[in-house]
Image (cartoon, rainbow, N blue to C red; front, side):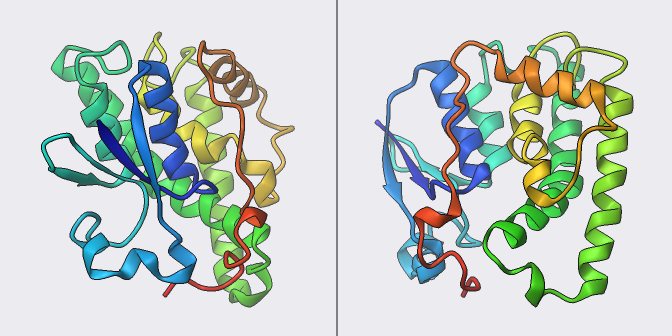
Length: 213
C-alpha cells in the first residue's frame, strides 16, 4: 500500500490527499511533525531531500517528494491529467505557476498570518509578497475569464494545485471581492465529486508558531 508522509495543516499535503480521494486509492499515513524537527531527521531526508511534506513511498520502496511531482505521478493514466503531450505540458505550466506565484506568495502570507509570524517578518518582505499576491490574483482572474478550468475545459491536477492555497487567499489577508471569475472557479472546484472540504488549522499543532529548523 502507498504511504503518504503528511502534515495535516499543510495545503501542499492536502493536494495529494485530494487526488488520492478522487482516485479512491487506499494509502496509509505517517505524520511528520515538521515544527519539532522531524523533517530534518536523517531517515526522513532520505525520503524528502528538503525535509518537507508531502512525500510518498510506493509499495516497492521507491520514494517521491514535492507535492506537484507527486500529483503528476499519481495522475498518470487518469482523467486528472491529459493524455496528449501538449495537454500535459499545459498542466505542468500551471503547476510551475502555482509553485512560483501561489504557494510561495499566498501560501507564505497565509502561513505567517495564521501562525502569528507576520509581525516577525520584515515589513518590506511582507509588502513585496502582498504586491506579488495581487498580481497572482489578477492573472488568475484574467485566465479564468477564458475557460472554466486552468488548463482547459476539464478539471485537472492544475486546479487541485492552485486551489490548495489560492482558495485560502482571504486567510492571507487578501480580499477576493474584486475577482468574481476566480471566486466562481473556486466554487466549481469545490463542487467536484469527492472534494475534500475539510481544512486542518495550524492550531492543531502547538509547535506551528515556531520557526522551522
